Structure formats: structure tokens, C-alpha cells
Image 1 (cartoon, helix red, strand yellow):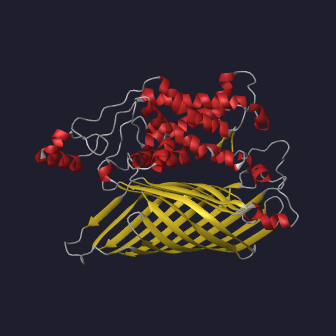
Image 2 (tube, rainbow, N blue to C red; image 1 turned 120 degrees about the vertical axis):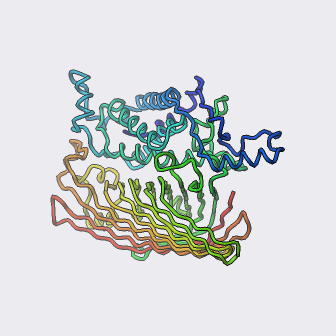
Image 3 (tube, one colour; image 1 turned 90 degrees about the horizontal axis):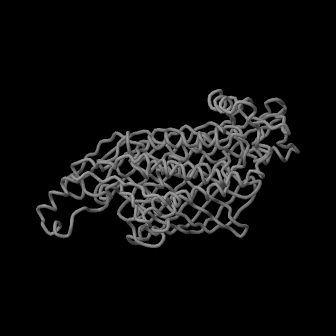
Length: 531
């Protein structure tokens, strides 16, 4: 349940230790090309007719996935769990405040009740960094299955099983954390699949940065390759549309009511894989579009911003109409399908920080495109149901009234954030003419706190007698203009407005009320380098 930095480090080392035993890799079907760019020998490539026939077969036939390697997945997962438990034991003295249970009597009955009755299943009160770290631990669980031939849904079920083993048995002295189960399983599957696909994409690109990130994104696969046990690519890269870029820039931001402003240097990355044209992905197997962005911004006060978001299109129904051969002929396409994602955002410092971390549990995505040789219009939208960890936006006003969080939800008292349900809505429109692009984005989010007191961990030192409810809203509007300087460089100008509002209500004490509204204006110049 408690993801400490040593446990995360142990997870990384898990991929290394399993190398001590060989892992059998399944061979691709002989009728299919290898899972890389090509499977023809130089002699075969010299024969035009045979090469063309092989290419036609590649395009027209579905890619046969590798067989499931149960022993390899079990070994990799077990190594991660065992090393995590060893490091957890070494740091247990620092976690004594989180211990609520001891085995008293029949151990089998203790664990059976713990697993099945739900009496121990609570929302825990760890700090946000510790709780959100479970997404990365879950990604390693997920990749233990995905690296060995299991599809997205099978790997997600394996992640849930691994998380349950950890929560129920490895951390038997603590509550079985509901929030950890959600973040580890759902967030871990989203992050794990994104990093899994990006590893294969980046491995095909040149440069130290793509190479280094591919090592980091799927450490077990990388290290196994060093020892002569490589995993075959699951994706035929010729059937995907890939993009990877890093960017930097300068941003100026100001908040109206808080009356603060700052100038920041930005550094970020974006990556995307669109495999809807391929024949190896489906709703029952491989997510057909993956997108991720990470960004940090630093001012003279230190690190002021950190944003990360990733999204999976699980599969889609679509139609595509190709235009004629003339430059003025128009083509159009559309798609619609289920999707999921996760997001982490921390903007600002100390009391003025706007923080939230969420898992987009399940949603619906759709999009359409109209284009000819010079002009293109893209329209996209998403609607997700969210499980969120949110710092109530009205916190600053609440504290300015001389109030405190003691006696409220223990997670609010300790970490100044709470658990919430809500939704995220995204809408974007882009219009381009040759190298010039104009775009607009809207992100609208609403969350309301989870107030089931019986499901919260309530230590004896915090009786939770003056609990709070909060409601938060975020609306982000962005407009941008970009110009493609070359195939490798794009220069863009952005302006964003963020409207935030929040309310805090007393549950046990109706007289408690706080509200805060603020608007932030942000403008920046950005330079992208495309690999």
C-alpha cells in the first residue's frame, strides 16, 4: 500500500534480478514478418517480386502476437514483489503510525477476513507522493505480463491481482487501501501500456535521448536484452504513425486574485503512437492510440510546475474516405471508441499551488478530420469519469479564517488533499495550412469529495469529528499558433486562461463555509524538436 522511494527503486531492480534465469521468448509465426521493420534477408530484398509479395502479405494479414509466457511473467512479477517486500521491511520502523492490525489467533482466518469482508478496506492517509507512486509500481506489475505476450486486459487483471497480494498480505498490518488499488491497477495499466509502446517506438529512433528513455520506460525488457534475452516487438512499426518531440520555452503566468506572477523556463516532451491503420490492434487486444506529455517549469523560486498526462484509445469504430488524385480533392474520416487515461498537475507554490492527480477510469473519445493536400481540420473530444486526489482550491480561504484541518478527514489533515469523484471533458480543434497551424483547446473538470466516513482510515489521534466536503472546478482555455520551420523544428506561441473555483462545506458543522475563485493568465513561446 505505501509506495516509498526505496520500493520504487526495488521495482526497477526487479527487472534486473529476473535476468539471473533465462526467459523463454516465443517465436513469431513463420507466415508473418518479424516484429521489427523487416524480416527479409538481403538476398530476398534483391528479388523485387518476392519482396513485393512479402510486403503485400504484411499489410493484408493480421500480425500474430507472441505466445503467452506464464513462467516468464511469474518470475518477473515475483521478483518485483519480493524485492519490494524486503525494502518495505527495512523501512517498517518509519511506518509504525500506519499500522492498525496484528495477527491475533488464526492467521488463515485473519487473511480470509481481510480479503473478503471489506472491514479492512479503507481510503488511506499517506502523502500524495507516496500514493501516486503506486502508478509506477503498477506499471511494472503490468509490464511483467505485457512483456511476456499478454494483452492489455489480461495484463490489467494481472496488475490487480499483484496489487491485491501486496495490499492484503505484504502490508497486513495496514488497511487494504482502496485508493492504492485504483491507482495501482488502473493507473498502472494506463502508464504501463503507454511506456510499453513508447519503448518500442523510441528504440527505433536515433539519438541518446530516445535511447535513454526507452531504457527507463521498460527497464526489464531493456536489461533482459543486454543479457541476450530480447523481447520481440509486438508492433509492426510500418503500420503506425509515430511522433516524439522535446520542447523548451519561456512562460509568463499571473493570477488575478492571488496577485502573484512569475516567469519560468519550460522543458517538456510529447509522444504519440497511432496504430489504427494497423491490423494487429483491436478492442480485445492492443490500445490503438497512445499519447503522453510531461512538462516541468522552473522560476527563480524553484520548480513551480509539473504536469503529466497520458491517454489510451482502447479501440474504435471509424470510417475513412480518401479524396481523389487532385490537390484540391478532400478526404474525411471519423472515429469513436472507449478510452482511459491519467493526469498529474501541480501549478504554483505553497498556498497558491493548484494540485490534483487523477485516473480517468473510463471514457468515450471521438474525432474527425477533413483535409486535402494543403489544408487540414481536426476535431477531437473526450469525456471521462474520474477518481481524483485533489487539494481543495478553497484551502487558502479556509485557512485564512483561522481554521485548521485537525479533526477532519485524516488525509486532509496530513496532506491537505482529499479523494474525490468527478469528470474531465476535453475538446480540441486544429486548422492547418501547409506549415502553419492554428489550434484551440478546452479542458473542463469537476470533482466532489468522497465523504463515506466509514471507509476512511481514522487513527485514534484524529477522531474525525468535524469533517468537510469540498467541490472543485477547473476550466482551461488555450489558443496557439505554430509554424513548422523545418522537418525537425516547430516554433509556437500559446496563450492559456485557467478559471478555478472551489467550496468547502462543514459536514458535522454546517457553519463552516469557504469559497475561492481565481483566474490565471499564461503566455509562452515554445520551440519543439521532432525526432
